[in-house]
Image (cartoon, rainbow, N blue to C red; front, side):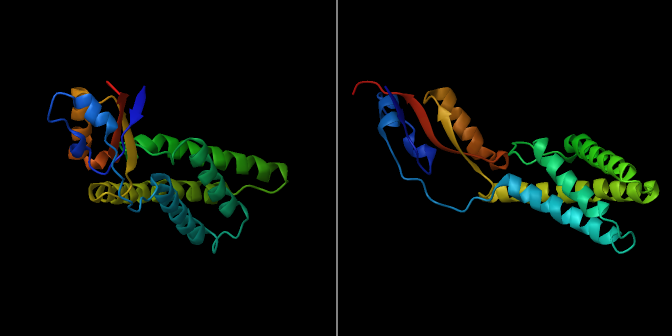
Length: 197
């Protein structure tokens, strides 16, 4: 038989006597409700604002449909490549390759569409828009990641985490997560077999 314990402070489940697993498995505490901002939504909003800046920068000078279309394509490729999934560690350097690839693919697709429609492609303007998109998105990501790290330390952007097992390793793992809120994982309970009833 398995049981789930959920609570706001895993330390209240820590055993003080011999029937540790039974006490842990049978104790149920109501979780406090606190606003939790989604990691993916925050990163997507930062990317969107960065691409709006790029679009606003280029559209007055190069009034072409492809600038907003390219920016929309870039956001879509970011989502398809899993850029908005929650992560424990956030690194702009690790994201750089995916960002450059998404921008390049979007740029190539739009260049092909422009060529097929019979219009001459302005490669200089297109290249400038792509370079600006990469630079501004990377800068925006750095700012958003710093904000998320700070928010995680304060309890925002956290994912509620259920720990499988209630033994010493699970307790140590929960303590480690509590000591490092920047990981964004908030232990709310243990799942383990019940002993006895």
